[in-house]
Amino acid sequence: MRQQLLPDILPEPAQTLENFVTGANEALVATLRECRPGRAIYLWGSPGAGRSHLLHAMSRDADTRYLGPDDARALQALAQAERHGLQRLAIDDVHLLDDAGQAALFRLYNLWRSQAGSRHAFSLILAGDRAPLALPLREDLRTRLGWDLVFRVELLSDDDRARALHALAQERGLQLAPALVNWLLTYHARDMRVLQELVITLDRYSLEQHRPVTLPLLKELLLQVERRRSRDTPATKP
Image (cartoon, rainbow, N blue to C red):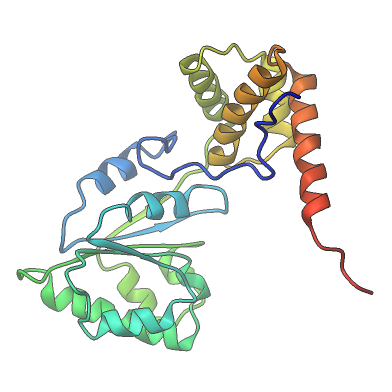
């Protein structure tokens, strides 16, 4: 029996600056690469633009921590200077912070500013879904989010996505038909990480099946993944 290599759920690719497709975000990515303790960078943009990808990419070092809007207690501890050697904090989806989270982030910003020129300096990288002054947060926190650098994360164009997928395929020795790439961009996820991992999985699946990479093979792969998800999802009781 042929060994099945197809995963039940497509695995999440690693989120790095190297595999972030920059598009119109060259200046932003360059700034993140040069981020040093004492700087604060706020990123905002539409869903799917890559905000979380960038924050996870900046959280891969041992001296960095990633926090989401549900980490209010951790934010409170960090605001009390309990950073234990952390030099960078990446705080995602600030627009979803509750009152306790907002209060903690307010104190953390004050701490960041007071220590910016000292040996205790640390950097803040934050992300939300809109510009600072448009956020549904307390006014004094909205102001602080604009204290240092603010970047809008621009969505990739379809041409950018297509070029990135073709480049990935070429690295793996594949030739993707334009019709297949157009179908992906029209009917599948627009998140670039998901698209990239799907191309990698499609490559593996074609090797397993001893069949060329075609649009029918892609649809077959996606159908199998969906069937496995449905099979493994517990039925909801009425």
